[in-house]
Image 1 (cartoon, rainbow, N blue to C red):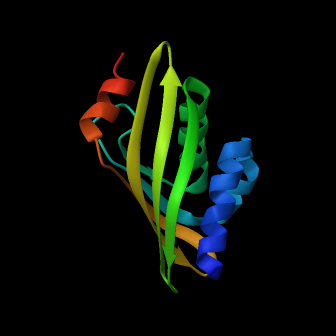
Image 2 (cartoon, one colour):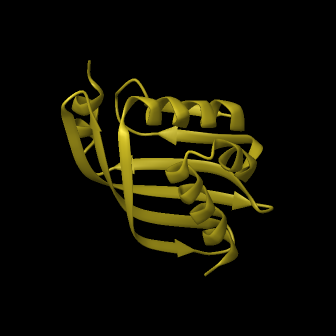
Length: 127
């Protein structure tokens, strides 16, 4: 497995285990996470602290299981094709997402999440 893919997979494993300290260490100091959709979690999060805080808040509000289908990597990027199962307050959502990671100097520099069903994801997060 490509070195950049190993970095990203460590992040997915850390998220699944609730290990936010490991996740934080994978991001560059000026990393930005771009979260797709039009819901309360959509938008840009800059810096490891804000990124990990956002992920911790999401995981405290919903049960999340990610099933990764494919990982494609080169010397600058990692693309992960996955399916997320989310549940909270009697609601559930299942949908595919494309994650695009830009990796530089063994740290994640930038991430874009692109949900295949942004409307369904937005409805799931609606109050």
